[in-house]
Length: 112
Image (cartoon, rainbow, N blue to C red; front, side):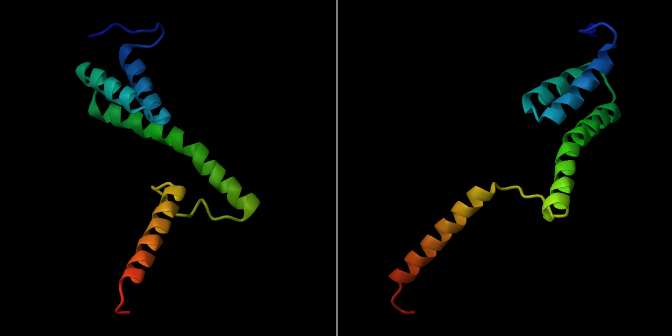
């Protein structure tokens, strides 16, 4: 069992806070390292999952709030829109490239 790094909180609490913070900050290396240490320390899986859920909640709230505010101020529908996983600029580049490829193939085809 490792000793608490900071005074005032036991090791388990510190690791759970660190795990939730890693999720909230989006730091994959931190999450991997802290999860490994916490599992080695024998912290219950349920507690680890709860810390991760809380971290994700903390991370998501500013994004949700800005969507609601933008919807109110600008009349957008960001809050109800599906989550976009691709960068809009990358998908626009792909669409342009696809259109270019299609137009090239039409030019090459003499049957249509």
